[in-house]
Length: 88
Image (cartoon, rainbow, N blue to C red; front, side):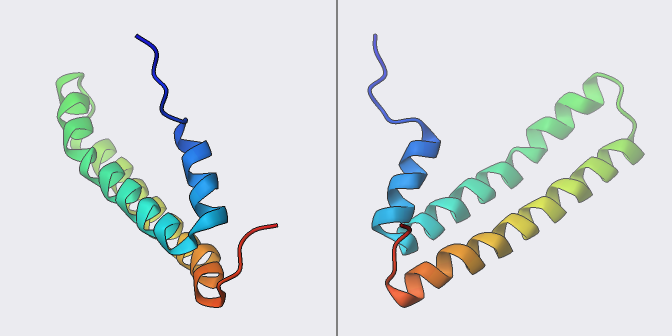
């Protein structure tokens, strides 16, 4: 079976160029999904012997990364959406 869906970067690129507001929503959804995966990752890490301190450090980094990526998306995509401009 052949997957005909465009790869995620191509889909985002298309949204950024055609509808920055929708691209920002898509990024928000991806970041929420990334954050929600930390529960599964934590469970797996604990099963393999990663201690709670290491897990806590990793979770803090994920939280920080999500915040930074969200802020960057708001700045970059929000500026495009607010002005109605698209990327050239």
